Image (cartoon, rainbow over all chains, first blue to last red; front, top):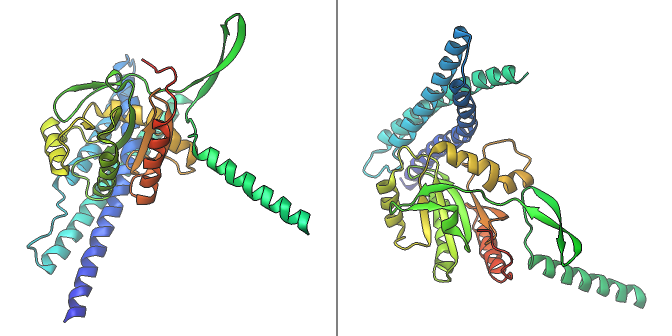
Length: 124
Length: 218
């Protein structure tokens, strides 16, 4: 009985740690994302003659903003307090949260890759 | 044999003294540049160290806090956000020890910058401070534009971390505590999640407090 209980607690802790690990990784990416967004925003303030170029810049900027917003929404909604929840509910909650933060991670990766590629092509 | 022993003891004593004197002086991080000036008709070369530039943020009481507000203070800086579920609660549990050690000594502040200013408004920061039991002016939780926070972090406060670390990027959410002296120079960075490093920070603040006041940047 006791072992079963501690096994359940161990599983919950591992699931939570998994979520937090991805969260911390994503937060570190936020630094690059913010930096790229700042550069792009300053470039968008300058006159851009080529309208296709401007549309592309705006699209990348929007991707950066959406990824940032997805990250913020996730972290504001995440509730580490699991008091009064059953083991099954906790497992489901953390598993869902893991999926959520993984989606944010992909969004950020895509936005960072695209913006970094664009900005380095401009600096050449 | 006897001579070898004497030599060994001498080396041991010398290294003990050496590490003792090193402990009393903290390094100065960041860029530095030599300047030559005339003092009493003599040419003197001095070193200008990187200092924290001007900034303006708002604290948990809604008061405007600038670099000038911190003039004459030794201060510790960190970066956090109130909904952070992972490292921030550990960091601030450790920071409470720093706060309790120095809150009554004067000329000392802790400033915690939120990196989630959209959510962490002044009332949210006040609530967070209250929960930690902070009701005085020794520990400020600051809100400002995200761009400004990231810029001052990257170009100034986390310079020491970058100098010491081989890891690329991702320092703002890595739990660092940064120590700034009264001349606004960067004197140390510590892992805020590690109680041993936080104890080292406490020792280093004491070292800074015993440093003679040189020319204080205004």
